[in-house]
Image (cartoon, rainbow, N blue to C red):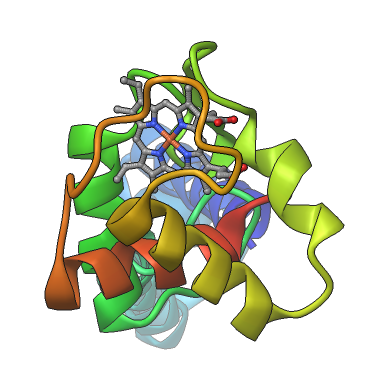
Length: 168
Ligand code: HEC
């Protein structure tokens, strides 16, 4: 998508440059061998269309990006509002110790969650596993993961986020 837009832009730029080099609309119509006022109007119309399109396309791309960036995690997973919150919380408290590609973290004190989570079959089970880890500590009880980094809704948001993105 982005490359298509870039290609269109480059073509628009070249077109405008060509017209400018030929001395504006009149020059362009001359060089296109179009006679009289009609051709000039057409060229002017073309330039107006180029300008409008040139403004519309970047506006569209900007709006498009603004809408998507926040809700698409690395790996292309679309996040819910809760998961976006969970990503924020995870980035704040969990990344020092855990690797998770979706937040580009490379912690090595705890297990790599991109490797560990996919060994659990369903999304629901993954979420429950992360949630119980946050609330009650790791199942094996060794290691030194701090207890209760989050509780309640925050713990759930983190668990939902990790379950959704781990391994992607
Ligand atoms: C200070 C380092 C540290 C922080 C911060 C930390 N963890 Fe851990 N985590 C660990 C360690 C160490 C283990 C492995 C413990 C074990 O195997 O007994 C672990 C294990 C886990 C496990 C696997 C549990 C299991 O039973 O195997 C999950 C899931 C997890 N952490 C999620 C999180 C989340 C989510 C956060 C943020 C709320 C977090 N961790 C913050 C160190 C940390």
